[in-house]
Amino acid sequence: MLGAIRCVTVCAPDLDAISTAYADFLDYVVCDRGEITAAQAAAWDCSAMQGAPTVTMRPAGGDDFQFRFVQRPLDADYEPLTTWGWNAAELIVADVDAMAARVADSPFAIVGEPRDLSFSSDIRAMQLRGPGAEIVYLTEFKKSVPGLDVPAARGAVDRTFIVIVGGASLARLQDFYHQTFGVPRAPAVESRITTLSKALEVSVETLYPIAALPIGGKCLIEADEMPPQVGPRNHSAGHLPPGIAIVSFDCTTIPEAGQRYSGNSGLPYSPHGEAAVLRGAAGELLELLPA
Image (cartoon, rainbow, N blue to C red; front, side):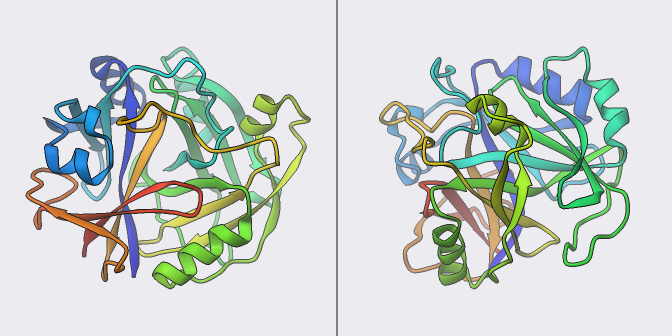
């Protein structure tokens, strides 16, 4: 039932600054501007966000994915990748080392240098911290990897094809997506999460249990089991959580637990204008778009 990743919503204190950064260094283009509607604020349980300005951007090479930036002050105590919930968006790129040189002097802070993944030397990735305290992975597939059906990059930087959710239990994360949407369970592997290890002040060689859950549109959800010292993401009542707040997916059949709302305009809601929201096992907010 769960299809492609269509939108990643990020809270940021300065929409001009974040949209300029994504345009200048990641080749994204503005495709919509607006504000959070009353229906969205109610469905997302964030009444204080009603009327907040938004900017939506897409990759230069495609219109099948968007980042939606919502104006909201940064939380001073928020440390990316050290709480449960949506922790990162992973973009497919043509050459990750070339991108590292490109963003070296930019509003994006490099928090993980390009490195082959611990479980596959055919995948090379780096990690950035963006102007909204969001974590963005830039990932290059040197060649096809068995068991991972991913899109080819249509330019230097393309769409988000993986979103990363962290929680206390990998089994509970897998159970939620399998039981709610029929997403196949995936084998667990041990992998480095450089940014998390740095934030927790442990060795960057520390391995964490993760699983790559296949969904539609050559996309995946990476589920990460976080160590015991990591807990829920705190945020002010009535506001979206800091960093990556929402991930929107195509969905062929909305689960009964999904809270439906309509009357939305613009991307990513076109052409139906309808959506539903649901909370995941780690408190992550999913927005479901009828496919």
